[in-house]
Length: 444
Image 1 (cartoon, rainbow, N blue to C red):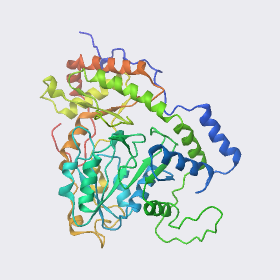
Image 2 (cartoon, one colour):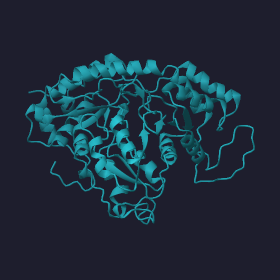
Image 3 (cartoon, rainbow, N blue to C red):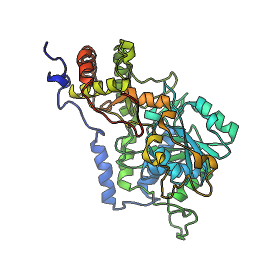
């Protein structure tokens, strides 16, 4: 019998050259950047584009304050400082995120404490939070993963009960809504990313948002070398009062981002159409679970993560991780642009397994660290829902515009082709190798 799948030499499903790159750049974007170059002012904490972007973004999400910085990582670090996290303070955050979430905590000598995720949303599971709270807990740091907001009512209620701050990692969630309210104003302070891959790109950049006057002052101070920021025209004292950094962004990136923000809702509408189509069509394939959007919420669809359930197909004699990798590789050969977006829980990364960020075991061995922090063991298998999600999942990349339904149709066709030929997938699965987590000793 001749092969049906591209992994075995058949013709790929998706035509080459069809996929477009992100972000789509218009003449207006080019003109905005060129205008900065002609103006000749390329940087500064009080210049036209940075102040304009701060005002535009604050208005867009309904925040009192916005502070533009040079990356999403910087935004999260500044948000952690704004929330008052200091040496030895513990911050509870999900085991599934980009590691910058936890890095922001460690950067100010805090201790990340991880929770498992909810099986449906893939966000922090609120039911797992309270058991992690100790006298050293300072804040909760939910992540709106892939652009779907976390269960903020429950998280905020727990924070209020235990007198904790809430820091939103909204890096992927510009325009996301939770029960009609915008990401970025759902907690005490938030950090967004403007990385070139994000829905609202600046190339690089980040934004801190809050409705609290004192919090924005602390964030601004640490993002400006630890100095009190004085209004433009007043004398700068060059007097660092706290540990700070140079987290300023540049005028060209800010101008580009402002230009994109003007058509952001339109870009999101196009992205949503692609994802709605995939949601409908992929759900028809037994064993495939597309991501979900709870009623009343708005998902930004920054990433589109699919999970596989071979047991629904009666396939029980192969580990789900091996099955998923076989399908993943088969779809890539069919021409579908796919990737993992991490392959292990954050606490499985070496820095946590070794508990050594700065040398000498810091911050877990510092003078302000609790005995619990000193004794803490980060075991990735303490987060079984997160591990299972990684075993089953991958991301479809080109859901962004200017890619359109034509490409989505080819992607769905490729899925059908693969799942209609599972005999080839099962045979192929015996031959593949794939990455494993540190300390992983499961038979896969």
